[in-house]
Length: 510
Image (cartoon, rainbow, N blue to C red; front, side, top):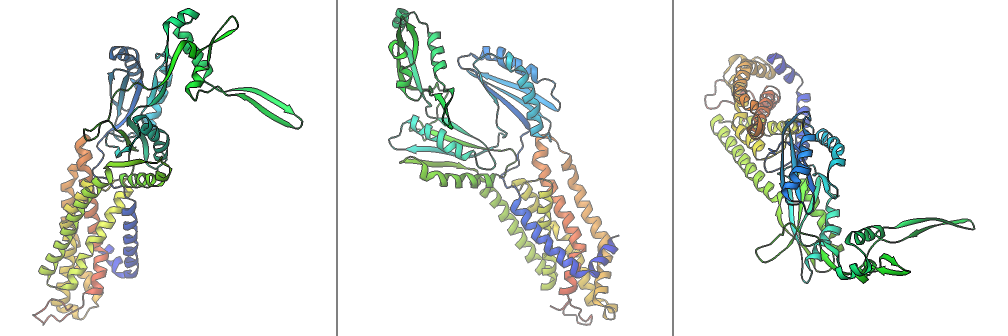
């Protein structure tokens, strides 16, 4: 079988060279589309449910919200773990699924269970499933700065201008707004005035809710035209609140402003964000989708921020203090540097020990071709280029030339020292030389591959860290073996010329 593979490659040299060029183009395109990150995502498939219950204590949340949700989520297929954390005003329920579970299928199962229990939960709570992200999904962080701008104004810019724009970027799961104050209108009823007109705070609340909406009033036909009639009651200013009628007392309208004080305030805060220990700040946190290309997400966010700068109010600045792309570049750059150094070192050693420039160049061609073939296999299997996977390629760099060195060295030996080679065509001599070492070379490479197979059996956290390393090495070694039996013999037939066996001073002419 191996002999037939070598024979086919030498008989169809033009086809093999074209296939090599296609491999280079495909490998380069695969590398450009390969998701790049600093490290592999070790998080499991999980779905989070976050519910907000203002004013409820942790004990109440645990018994009235967390416990019913946990009971309802029991029994979902492929579920591995179920846990919850209850705090003042908020509960976080996490459902972990087996590795490899489709995240959209898992969210569908949780959504169906959650909708079935929605009617049994206390009124006034809000929330639902968290975005499709992972604990390692924090891609980009920035603060909104502006001289003379209050925390409310900066938070409003983040909520209504920056956040909607960034959520449109491909690969962004959500943009969290942290810190600052969310502007609101506050109504402070006067108990004495309420008692005088016979009103309660519940009636005040109902009146505000009933008057804070726009309603339609039908149609008005006039000639050949039909006009839509509607009333605008949505609250926009404090005066709109003060003008709401809360009671009709003997023909006299009692308005909200008569029995309560209306002022601007902020929504109750559960925490603050500080910067450099100098005071409060408003922060935006960009979360990436699970499995998204971190580098492309950061590039999209950066471009979007540049696009919206002209639309920001005067004096507002966006200051970035964390960028995942910087971490990715440093991590991948470290491995890339090691990869280049290993390549140069291998080339120097090949030239020194083979003693033949053309033979060294022929062997060296297996390095870029194997790397490009590895990128194609990584892209096909859904792997990302990170510290571990590229590290595996760097580890395999010295082993990639093993098969090619043996093949080329044997070809050189036959061309320079075999008397029979003088009467045979060069292609036949190359075929005989490669055929002699094909089986030993394949056996030796397969033994090295078998050594790394136990790493592929690792599970859990260990598997997510070390399986990419083993897979990359296996992909690179298999690619190197195939190339050493196909492309390398073809290159050797072109680059290595026949020399006289009587010349003791050289082994092959250059």
